[in-house]
Image 1 (tube, rainbow, N blue to C red):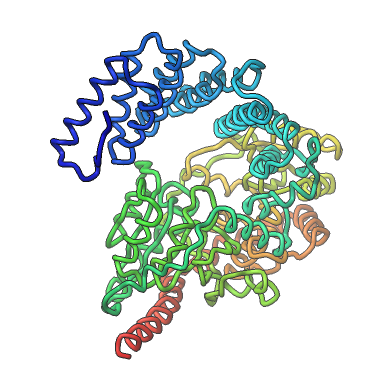
Image 2 (image 1 turned 180 degrees about the vertical axis):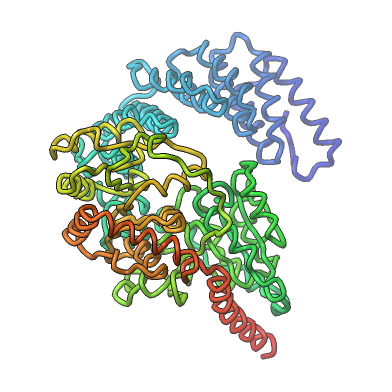
Length: 627
């Protein structure tokens, strides 16, 4: 029998037809082709549960069919799409009991095991596919199956911070098939995270140029200060990943915008994240007489006081988790948002397609991505004249909204832990302590080598660092030894809670900034706690962030413009601890009252710019309505 017109049939008729189908499936007379066609019809009619039941009944009713493994595979696929991962696991295992070399079933079983948190079992299934010479598929198909297994294993290992194993599988994959830009992208960044220098290490037939052209924007911000390369990386992402549309959803509003100006903040990081930590007070300080705040977010509900504080500061909160991009854009457009502030750009977890649908007439990039995003839906970027000088503008698709002082907001209410002692962190009491608490992927071999030369020239000094993982630590110690720096002069700080992380800045004498990826939130934290930063400013927004903060806090003499100048200044300060002490005294006495931390003024400056843009847009809309 056939299931006819399920989408238009009445519920009772549709239910009756499904029951008839299930009975035929149980009878053992339904052919596999008919089963698959009927299951597809059910799915297209929005009845995936019924499709799963159909497969279940067919498998139970045809114990002697040579095609049961195929039906089990399809059954597992439907169950997986329904997020019934344990049931899907059982279906795939049944398929494999019938056909042990059925590689597609084993690959999908690995995905279900991953969803169930069974990491070791998922990796074991994928390893079997990669090594099974009898796996279904020949020629290119066999290679595709093997690459699928290797690449998913590498991805899962990277997610679980098993970087060396992940990198080894990436290399194996690229040796089998060099033309894999996505694998190259992860290969470059995983080497950065491990301080495995040089980062651009060719593998197999993959060339340096191919690795460079496949570098993600995030990795490029650490790899190069060339704004043209950063723009290229952003444009490649947009070309490959962002929806092409001419829709302008904001224009569908039937009446012109009026009343309070509506500001929407779009982000997946309104939680315990650098963006959340920086922006909490921004939302609280907005003038509620003139502005209405909306949060559109898909952040993790981490249960932290910070997330509760951020959401409390909003007038409206629209949860976008599980909402598709176009529908999310429609929700923003329906809210009548005047200015949509994207706090994420192209960083991890971003949803740039929302912006592509133009849900707001004014869309602005801010904080999350200190670089051009090249997103066609983002016309503006918050900046200052230090981070975006005139010579940088040709490499940005956005126009700058200049704030008078620094571009960066911060939080004056951040909780600070008890002041620790140097002994607590195994720091020498009488040494000059250089520190750098930036993530390891933010610096390369040239920066680390300069730190080693500084240590060699400053007697009785140590470098206090973060080690994101065991491989970065080992590689840093290896390079230190090559520069004649004893291992005990590198002291690695553990991860601690934010209040304790802030408190320990006070133990350092001078923070050495990274390049080209400067400290951002970390620089704000450091200066707030009264520790001076030595930075090197370059050509790009991201390599000028710390310089912007130092200018606003009143310490522009700590900005250098070349590696040589940076190194010389670090040695000069390290050899004269009194100079570092004077910087600390200045920050203690005047830092928090400087323009950098004058948050009410920063927020008023930001509001003035938003208001100017929003009112001009409203006038245009009113003129269009009247014409």
